[in-house]
Length: 202
Image (cartoon, rainbow, N blue to C red; front, side, top):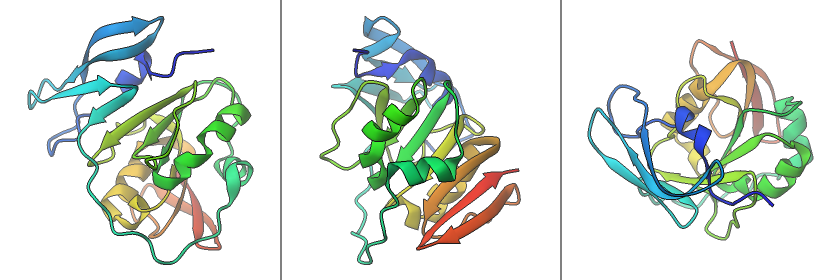
């Protein structure tokens, strides 16, 4: 069974979440298991901040407390999310933000060879092989870095997370979410249903 820790190549797709131009992060591993980082440090060459990888979690800042969402939306389930994403074949990264990270285990089994990045997942989320848990105050993904992204609650209610999510997807690939639809010029809305939307990065 693959280790439950940070896949080393994910470093190339993460950005410093501080408020400055997008920057790469430098990885200093303390403990490795194959190509997986068990413990280590990520450093930003621009702002000099350092972020720890501890207990299977990449700590890129403390996720701010969000008010609970009062109106529950229908849960489409892992199979429906995969259909909306339109992903096929191995390779690359799929990001799940917020409560939708609860579908990580099933999506991982449906997408063998695709690494899942769980950003601010629910507290009771159990990391599984083929996944990396990341905590951050802002979406910590570089532009054009993932094959797909699902934006769940409560982060879907924040326009900053929605716009950043749209920017993180590779051109021609899809973003699925609830809440406000991205308004960036390079986002094309494909459809909406039951409070969820799906679109494509131009």
